[in-house]
Length: 285
Image (cartoon, rainbow, N blue to C red; front, side, top):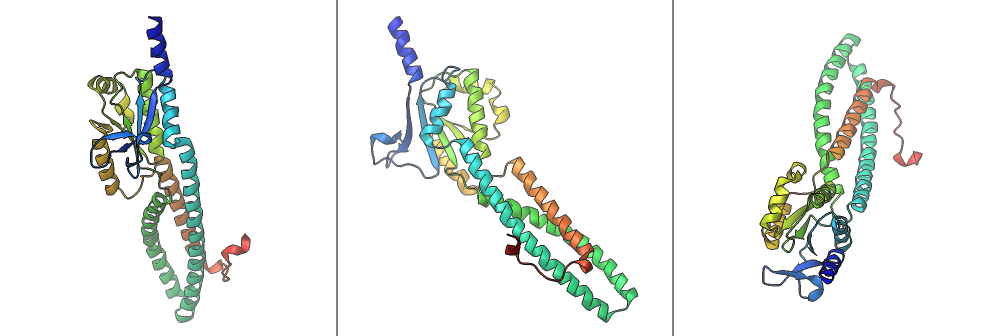
């Protein structure tokens, strides 16, 4: 009994883990260290943890997953924020240049208009311009919002689009393990990576379905085999051009779009008093 307990504890604390690759010409997947002929699927990481998951080793499972795949969500999130911030700065520079050019063109247009028409006609013309500018600004806001979201989506591309977890040898998970697994999936989702569970046994599926797992996961992540998960992941990646923006990123894009629209509106109202000389962007740096 003592020896049996010892081996159980040892296997729990030091389970067999590996990153997996596809055997050429088959639908089988094995440890990448076993043969150089194994194929690592582009854009997909496959991870195996040969031990049941419960409160004692759930955190170890998470740490080993990050270590073996080289995909730590915290580090990836930092890289994503830097990439988005860089894209935002670049877009702000473009908006500033557009504002300067818009102000200069508006001032020149108003000067030419004053030379051609009377004061009364000028006032009526200005009123018409204000109405047309309001509609134009609404269209510009919509275009700007869409352009910013597209730019942000392209600014950050994760190292892989999917991580497949081989659960074929796992026969039991407890509530603590399910919560940690849910958190892992949510952390990866923030950086544009999906998690698929492959080969889950019926008992494990029942435990997962009884928990609050699906209340936090908004996509199907359970598949019968590794190969099925890989094929579905490849199909989904072909349909989607880039990782979706998180709600926080969308709010940042919308806020930037509103600020740009407000600045353009202010320039339109005070175009006469705006400086005629166009400064160089690099002058203040």
